[in-house]
Length: 118
Image (cartoon, rainbow, N blue to C red):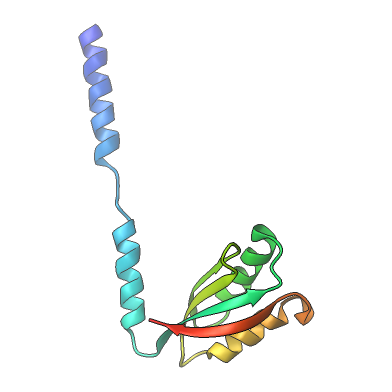
């Protein structure tokens, strides 16, 4: 009986470890494909006025991600930056900046620098 439980445990462990999917490379491949398409651009912006990660950074990230043409929206509270990937045929970097500056009536956040990144 002890051998049966040992064999069953070993089989269970092998099943669990063999089912592991490596999605990291899939995400990287997808981002490279999106970037390679015509009209896709990346910008990095410095944002003033963020006071917390959950409220401020996530709010900006969420609002920008809902804009038509934006495919990637990542805001770092620690770095005070946002990185956005977008289709330039649908939205411009100026429109993204205008949207960030206009959150909460334009009272809280201000983009102070824009850089185009590859």
